[in-house]
Image (cartoon, rainbow, N blue to C red; front, side):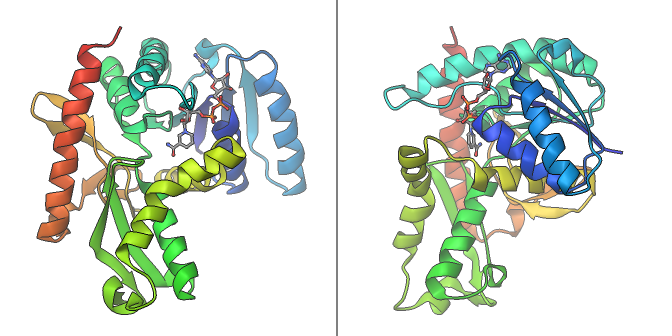
Length: 304
Ligand SMILES: NC(=O)c1ccc[n+]([C@@H]2O[C@H](COP(=O)([O-])OP(=O)(O)OC[C@H]3O[C@@H](n4cnc5c(N)ncnc54)[C@H](O)[C@@H]3O)[C@@H](O)[C@H]2O)c1
């Protein structure tokens, strides 16, 4: 029996809920959002879709966070997306306040839950929620960039997406690191497989820049990330032990921060596999962790 609570039913929240419930692994779902009627009418839509797919998930829709109880997994996508003219600091401050409010209520009513953060800046929001709740929180992190990397390389080289392996990590978004020594196509190292056809720079430009291009036209990213969130929920609820670039908590100097690393995801989170990365990829990861620590420290110390 898996009970999943979805906190936020906006653009990405709805897409995650739809993708996840269609996977059939969720027995009970709770949908919470502050907008009146939104969870309730979205529930109707879902019931019709699930009815057509012959899936019997029990759905409870609510505008009261106090009614979000006893979930195994709580996925948080509520909050603001970054506006074109908004600084990273302003987005951090706005969404951190929401996370601190959630941290006062959700943990005590969901004593067994694993918390999965989606709200941006996702790695920092996971750290804020964990700091104020004291509960295990993971960031969906760079797992979406793994799929952007693999699908782009597969398309450009004309191979099935299954033929491409490879991990990204560090920071979700434009500051992402690509662990090139993990990237293979049909078992061959990327440089050998792609020689004369595709460069590392072309791949990096796509993987780091495509979200902004999608947002400019569609208003936000949804379907790509939502499917990776579904994969994380499925991996946890079926104890799949799949290696994913999520960000599990990392004790770094005097803080717990979230930095994406290839990590085993099942009913337990971890271990992380950074020790299996090449020296060069570990160097990239360490540099990312240091940068992310400094940025987080400054933001959390100046949180107003
Ligand atoms: N990690 C990722 O890969 C990824 C991908 C896409 C979006 N995001 C992030 O997810 C967040 C949501 O994006 P979106 O496009 O769905 O935005 P959206 O505006 O469509 O939806 C946000 C939802 O949050 C709800 N909400 C806001 N404050 C709330 C509160 N205090 N309590 C309950 N609900 C509240 C709103 O009512 C709305 O329904 C943003 O921060 C966005 O940047 C992350």
